[in-house]
Length: 194
Image (tube, rainbow, N blue to C red; front, side, top):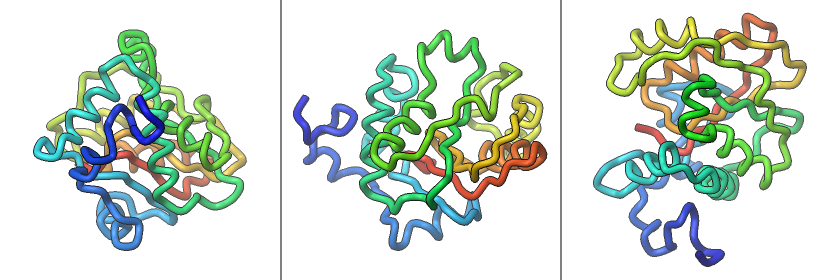
């Protein structure tokens, strides 16, 4: 793989990605998460190959794909405010064990490598293991997610990092759980919007 590859995808193939431009993409993201800082890489679609890329990132067993996408995203979006920490949305230990890694953590590591922000994987532990929320409504997602997380106190402002924002329910619920623990959540970053 050459230096020009991102997550195993060559530059000419990346030209097909429905990339979200920072100049106008914030409005699209804020429909799901209206926070001070938001960033996302591309729309997740079957037609443009980004759905397969996200699937490979989550289930392919290659954490470097997530780190590569995190670095790619960091090069495209302005850096979050100074002093923020990157908090990846965690997997339950069973799912983490089955996959071998957490793709949100890989994304956060790629972002951190480029931006220099600390990654704090200990702030938002997942305590419950549920089934996949793919295809669930926003309300169903929030109900399931609310019971899944517990938050630790964090003095630094938090930027949540996750793989895909579908309805915004995961991000909103994680934000609520973190704020109830006294954390200040100032933003969210996703590699894809579904």
